[in-house]
Image (cartoon, rainbow, N blue to C red):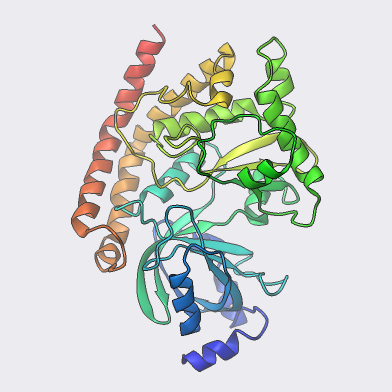
Length: 398
């Protein structure tokens, strides 16, 4: 394909061709964790140069995607991420309905190509999301890909299910409300953000319902934070759970704690890397995992690491029933990780799958030796983490 044909093709509506090939592929094929996918992107050379030069901007450019026998034209592509924006290996968001409301790819309206530049192994993110799913918590689906732009190899990427209606269908209601938490320069530990809606729109960036008024979208979140910071009395849980599922929240934090996630809900920079969801017919919110590429931080991180800092979690585990639940989920995580040697096999198989492609990745900021060292550390994590957590639980329950 020539550049001229690419530029011409992106002027038409998003379509998949050929139709026969489209029927042969599915979203399950795309997110198959045992397959290293090949994804081709084509875009105007000047647009690609501008995207790299302005990687910290969210400007959209027009591009074309090819995957196996499928082709999607006229998609929107932009740089994404917080601290992971990298001009040599940009993290990308693909919006198939950016320029036409009917644009989709395998039923998806959007897709994330995560550059995983904070992870020398490039495998942590997908394994973490798989573990959330293993523990019964809905999480974005992920797989691995070699990405080519205009025929040039860009490196290994993680394909991530976007925060959109497809994910919300699995959460329970595709017409619900979905928000991505946004990290800021100020460390956020769950404080009440006050009466004005503006701070809520910044911290909890809406992913849908763009045309709805802030009062409709954010009033339940504002009330959620008021109750989470409310008086410590006998009705605390009753009042909070009108707006926030404390039991589900405790489960989420337990999973992150087992995985030693240093940049999550109880992160070293304050709360980070989660999405918030509520059904359209309810005011109650649930939390979900996002950007889990900082898990496996330490084999011996404690089961109450930074627990006192976070207002939501500190108040939750002050309730005896929720504290017992937190400990119980930690135990379930520890036992599930070693059942059938699950976590070790995930590390070994994922590393083997991407090994050759990682070594050929000239755009990654880490070395091949760092890849090898990271994989060996994760194997050690898989060998020792469960025993360490179980020992801490035994001491806590004495």
